[in-house]
Image (cartoon, rainbow, N blue to C red; front, side, top):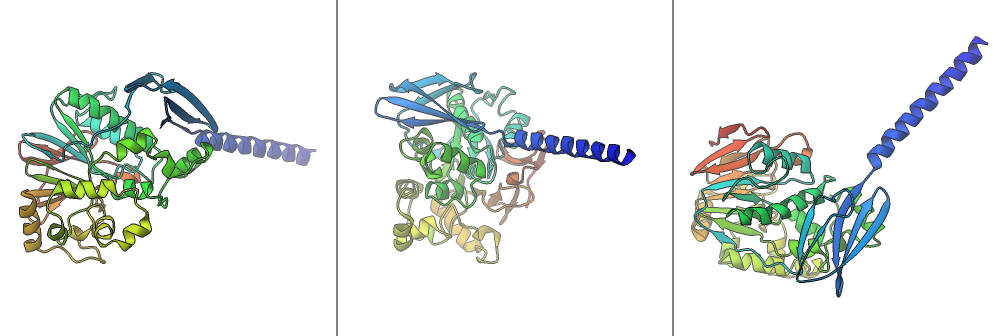
Length: 365
């Protein structure tokens, strides 16, 4: 009798444990993503993925379209133009800059970093006046909140402009490779979302989508005052082949959709889009596969673009730091791991590493 009671109790405990585990797994499996906006001939098709169910809405398309979110995002106002113009790639008279790199779907850390340093408030509203926010690419891949981060960046672009500031979102190698159908680092969430829409992941960002048109309008490099911003770095041979930032931006954005085999077999495009190009190059940091750039080569690059420093991401370090006599600053501090975050604050010519709480540390070699 006691054995039977013990067995029955054990079975009940196992069932309860199984149900709890299943409930936790189901909770973790709950996924919401959207809106995804597709342009048709005369309307916008707005799609969401809501816990395994695809939900679609349609609105008539006008010059600039605006709508409130239809589901959990009902408090959000989306303003969607038909087309996007590429932003300027040179700016002057900017005193306050905040730089973040390689977010990789870690939206919560990104948001906390901006809030903790007075860039946005608790409602995600821009409060940094005429300051400039620079995102050095790689918002895509690895994490599962890529689109949340993108929507925040997009919203802040408009808000900052209204206050006399600006947001600069440069493309990194992970934006480029996803647009080119390289899905090695895409989170499973986005494979599921695309599949539910009966399209591929690159088609989530096709030329007929809001994301696709917005992303294809972005620059690869930008110059702000005496600083050059780029995701990866500048190979010494780049300045021998290309004279201006604008040339590089135009060639690369124009050819993002070019077939990868064509890129591989074209000497110009192959150089720009592969290991020595500006979204991939790691020669500032002496990895095993590349020689460290020499002082003379770096001087030639700085003189070519008429800048004093180059600010880069891409190569992950423990903290934001400067190298090469403070002429290069690396901003990729490993936000992608989801454990901590840092930003680079540039104020009146001083350079500070800042954490999630806004604590500042002057950067030195």
